[in-house]
Image (cartoon, rainbow, N blue to C red; front, side, top):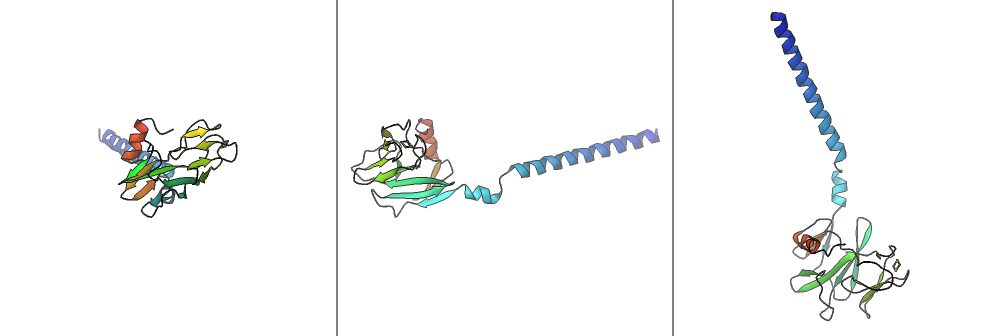
Length: 168
Ligand code: FES
């Protein structure tokens, strides 16, 4: 009887250690799957839009991709893909042609983007208007914080566009 009790205790203790070891292994696995803090920080780009000038294209960088930021002038067509901050409207997109990935140039006089590779054109909302591009310029995930745009985070405005089917 005494011997059985000792064996039960040893069994329970061993089971406890095994469970702890298993939890430790799971924790170690999770830590190795999680991105490093430096990688997480690298996923975000903040852009201050307060100094942006109308009809002047700013090209920023996010996750190695060019990002087009264009403050729209009053004569440019308003579009549901515009990012609205106060009374200002912005076109923000990943600056890679949706045909084969060249970087289109912005033509301020014609107020459109032109891709030199195969002649594709996009308007100031990023819609393809000429040539082979099959879809509009892509909008990166964004969040608005005052006059700052945070790229890499899905804010309510981005989710609204996504729900409306405007994100390709
Ligand atoms: S890559 Fe832009 S039109 Fe072909």
